Image (cartoon, rainbow over all chains, first blue to last red; front, side, top):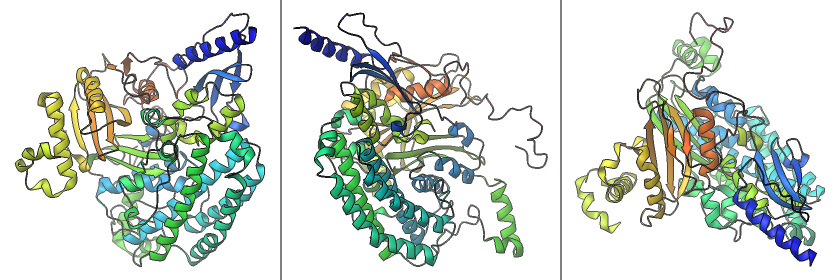
Length: 420
Length: 186
């Protein structure tokens, strides 16, 4: 009888907590049967994979309510961007979703190109597609393998981390950096693919599918893994849309919204690929959607590499694209343009533009208001995980602590992007 | 599409561009639902239909658009604040981006209001995602969303006593001399 009372009480409290989970002041229960524990999950808990905190109210092992606190690594990117010339903002975008920074870089470049009216040659567009899909693969690999770590399977993580290392080596050949890539320039790429880069890319495309198959064989039908993730943290399509979900998390809930297909940019319309969707939006669906997207990204890379057109790798836009360094020493026009670009003396047209790309974890949007000056008047980043992370308390309430960790890592929340 | 056909001949030259045609259709529907006087400064910068409305109307418009099956603008992509200190009476603004996932059409709505009275109705009762977006705008611009369930700072520290994205707050300390550049300015 006491057991029943407790259960009923728990349900009641869960219902109440759902109503007021956004309140900082949590309800105090002085019931003899109820003694809630406050647990600080984070800010530096290893399982949060980033600096953010959740204040959880626990009834035993079960979560009654959660209050997320974010902003621990807020760096005021939107304010800084109002003082920087366009080309210097690329380095800020690197530091948002640092698991897939080339996507952020190119998203920003495409926004500026849209504002300036610069058309990028096909070769540069295809090169961008290759790098963006590599970034997507490395982003999804990290998310899925970390999900494995959180469920207790460390081996898969080590398997695919080696592949991520190889992707970073390709980045290194293409742009010289690994994590915060600052890849490409406004108007195209900063240099062509070197023969070594192409060689590494081709070698990786050959070796990776076997590793991915092994990774999938380890998880997809693994009984222990499925017990931990199936039906954990489900979210309906209506709720997901209302919460502003995009990317794999929305597709796992069954909505086939993909920016690459709906508003193709950078020649995505030239490639053939599928949009994987889930059905009930639980952790398992999110995991499977990401796995399938890795295969689709591989398809895109292979097509882009096969069809990679010859030609220039940047637009003929001397006002915005830095001339080759050698020309700066020998050619008067090149010297002038170099000086003007570096000093940020080149004005942009007046206007406002919204451009979005399919980032690693959703629709990454850039809303740029230009008043004609050298810097943006206002720049707003639509950061996908800032927008969908607010659904986390609702998804975690009622589950156990270990499930909450799994839900969190399956959402692919990146602290740098969350806090901007 | 068909009920709006009579509106199309008004601008036959632009009917070739599907983006413009879709925007014209959307605008006609907006006028039909909420009245033409509700929207001013209608533009299409870079193909995205942009209209300014008032803060009294914004809640009704967003709610009405979410329910309207014909256009299906049921996805709030993002919202953000903006500050124009040189526009008296319209210093602060809110910019909403709506997206129709079924018809793939976007709409940008703007409202402006005085900085002395920065009160705007909340959209949290229409979109759950508006919660943190509005908290972010409150944090950075000091826009007060009436009816918001939990309007507290989100990214900045709680004891901050100003709203840093307003143009009156410079990015760097203006009194520093080591950062002045005599030749090119800062």
